Length: 501
Image (tube, rainbow, N blue to C red):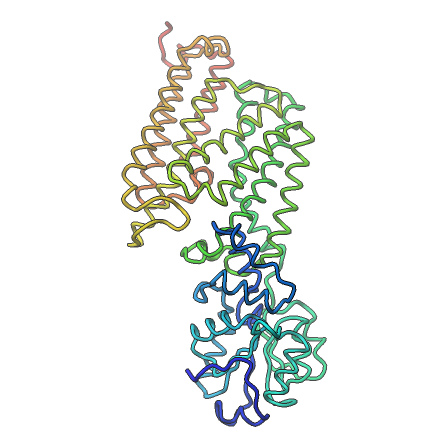
């Protein structure tokens, strides 16, 4: 790569010495070469970092160019993790191979602009902000004219801020642009257009993770256990609680994805998430998170469940930002988040959650949380990675003890369930409580199968989401419901071949 010159100036013919006779192609960075904005990326990294309280005062500057310089210094973004526009990047590599001069022209600070140029090794020159001058809009157009002359360059950009540069260019390349931007380019010919932006609705919906909403059906458990599924008012209230958790959980998922964006980009599958891939912008993600959180808390207020919802939101946010990094603490917090859903169902419907249900669900949810974490660590082992998992507190060597903890929790839940079947509470609430013994092996079988699937590498990030798509899990659920129904209505033991006491 030729030496990179920051904010260099020359006569309009200098481009011939930089790459031959072809007119140089000047390329914007934010939103064009990459699907994100490095200034916003840097600010998010600073806000979600452990030493944010020390770094934040350093951002208190009035000049935008100086702000970009400070953010670039404090955030130290990895250019290898940025979401590049792959289609456009391949085009640029082809242009470079043909001998054309490529120039990175960006309002980003010199530190990140040079880092990107060094990483890609396709640019002959760099024009960028330097802590004094913010190369954007008219300033960028003026710098390009000074460097190459009027109509002495082609320019690739993506939004309205690039209109001044297109005005001075010979040809315009439109990349990842909103609809209608090409019609505003009146002075330069639109030479090439690359893929338009991904529709906002689809990316936003995917970022909200609707497939995770199945966990929120736990709010219906108290209703089912109280044999009140025919109570339409209670069912409506449980439904509102379900929607409240869906909205609030989506808000937390968005916050989690924003905080974890760098780690997600290193992950072979999570890097395709809307925020990590750049299909959904960080500002849009923040706005969506606020809206979802507002809807969730409003719905919770309607059913007088706002206190537990605030606890859930605060705990989940703390988990996303910090608690997930503490070993053992993280799985207990996950188990607590499951339990809060059950408790909220009881509050919403007016059917209290018994201590038996809390004990059983506590061990069960702890087991499921350990399934989730063990699955992540097992994937780390299979990928031959070493060391500590990103934004987790576990080492690969912890895998065996995590499995032991989880299996112990699974069997503890079975013991609690067995003790309940023989308790006075079961006799009081069920006509033939002896039938409930059939649930014990089913629950243990289901959990053992989850653990086997985890060790074989089949486990989804969340075991409940995995179970929602698993036909064996559905058979177990149906069998459990049939047994509970039979025990409730008092099906005689002789019908199922069990001798009476």
